[in-house]
Length: 154
Image 1 (cartoon, one colour):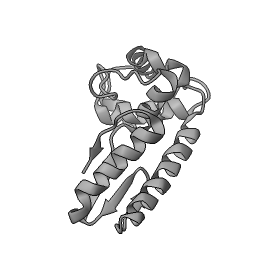
Image 2: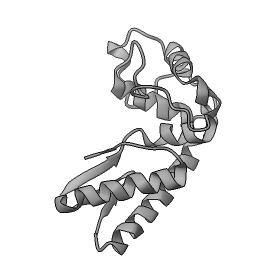
Image 3: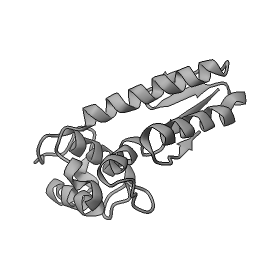
């Protein structure tokens, strides 16, 4: 089996909704002074929060960071000016609903092709022999429903 996973799913949906499909170059989670794993957690905390926060989100060991949480939030807002209005709105739960609805449609598309898939959040597990078809279904469904291209890793 193989797990096929959308890359940068929620940020890409935000760019479709807030920036008319304009997406920044490179890795969305690439921010100076931070490792990608930290940026991803903080980015997601910022779209789920209703206001800027003063302490580090759970899962971040800040002992190896030489930056404050306030500075990190400013760096992310600076990195993402086109979607800055989405931060601290609590929109994360709506994005989870969108990705859940997408996954249901992808699973139905695959069933119609005779392919069984197991969903895991924003990814699916399929037999390796179906990798190409499943990847195509995922990218095409995302493009048709969200309006942007997306990378599927697996």
